[in-house]
Image (cartoon, rainbow, N blue to C red):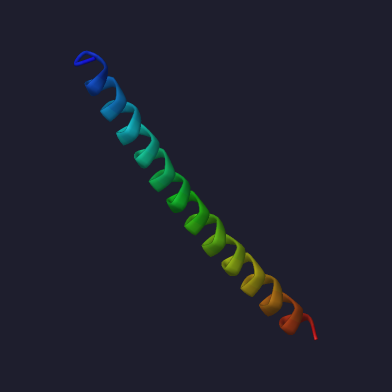
Length: 48
């Protein structure tokens, strides 16, 4: 059973790091969406 402990810890750390990466990607996606939307709004305002 001792041999499995480092593997379980490693998998746990891997899952945690992956979820943190996903959070960062989600944040970047949200920021990109907001910036894109703002640019589109400014573009529409400038056309009027």
